[in-house]
Length: 377
Image (cartoon, rainbow, N blue to C red):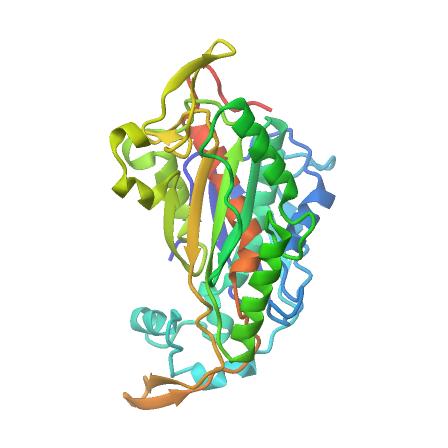
């Protein structure tokens, strides 16, 4: 089964949670870009497990080994970019009791329905959030390339359980609004343990995660992501629009269940006069004053901040007893999950969302650039 997305920039991830290694192959990176490996490793470390009591205790360094795509000077060379990450801390025996008994809320049952027992079960196999590590390796390079063009991508935890962070001030596209948004982006994670704008929100979220962990449960949440510095005109109408491209890749992140752009579901209760973004001339260019659209109209960027939010479900693997079925005998089977699992997967998904956003923006700019403005480094 393919695990590839993209048009001009094709990204493939491979491996399983407990295979010897996982990795990615990226075809289409522009050549001649010197990858900063220190920055890439720092970005990877934001997603790595074992950061505290709010994540899985599984320890993995997640340092990518680049096996192709760079020349001896460390610059992209036009060949497919390939990175491999070793799985060094596998406890496959922890999953012996779920080999034939699917975990509720997990892809165990649907994988069995498709492959009838041939699927790799330990750790969730190819359905595991472990596969987001190579996605970050690919996205980390894309982030560096976009930064060289003045594009900045930033995500934060907007919600964990009932605890909420303040939202990005991205619906106001005035110079003052842009300034407030830049300050918020600078503040994410600066004074807090988690990736929040408000440090108090981080503490409230940690309390929600700890409460779920202590009760042998898990908790979900939401992530908000913004990209600034994009020119107007990137993307394509209809089925290859910027929303389509981001949504398709975002739903490849395990546990993502919903996405909205700009004002999202709020638009259902608005009038056109409330939702429309008026235009003005600024620095000789037509610019939207507000940003209800989230920086996208007709699948094409407006030049305003690109804004979207993702809802992420609670970790399915919980230690509470649950009811399931033994697929070998088709009889009821009580289940208690063992092993090492995140009480909240949302905290480690923040850099993954940034990676996916960067890859989709770069792909769209390469495939469907504004006329006369191809992506050139």
